[in-house]
Length: 231
Ligand SMILES: C[S@@+](CC[C@H](N)C(=O)[O-])C[C@H]1O[C@@H](n2cnc3c(N)ncnc32)[C@H](O)[C@@H]1O
Image (cartoon, rainbow, N blue to C red; front, side):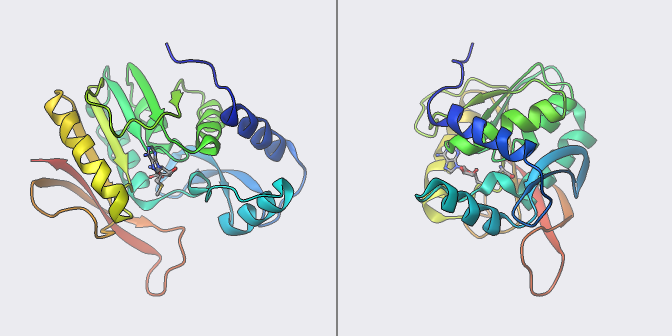
């Protein structure tokens, strides 16, 4: 049983609920939209996350964490697509979505029939966003805001991690955690658009998707994303 949401995450939830209910439709607003590569899942996303972030910081009067949860990352979209197209991967299992952002992959796991889904993210706004997004998709997802990356044991049958290899420091903590998850008996699936911090060896490619990107791109509106499993 997870503790009720409190502190920073409860404050963030109040702010997001206020944002969702506020009138207005500009670039600096949240909109409930179908995820481009996973239209079965609708998410509260910012049309322009940077503009939304700037407005929220101006309102708060202090710096806020970058709103990663307000975008549908390519790695998470590919992983969510893979779970919905291969529901046997999640069905009946205990799933942990690590660094869950919007909660897209966790929601896909729940729609695929997972017995129990936990979405974990250290950003209180992500914890709040997962709560409103799970609600919008009528699924049950437990949310945890703890930093789990130093945990010795991983209590899940399936661990999913979308777009988590975006920096060296993150990769240096994430890889050992995922290795411990495998050692604990969990299956691990990673969705990665080639951000460069994922080692090429020791991973098997299960699928390769052209994912519509929501990020600024100079050459293509699609990103190739691999879904991988430790070999
Ligand atoms: C690029 S986003 C990916 C979000 C989501 N998985 C997706 O694919 O849409 C990375 C996320 O990692 C989260 N994060 C960073 N460090 C973390 C940690 N130690 N534990 C859990 N989440 C973390 C950030 O808050 C952010 O939401």
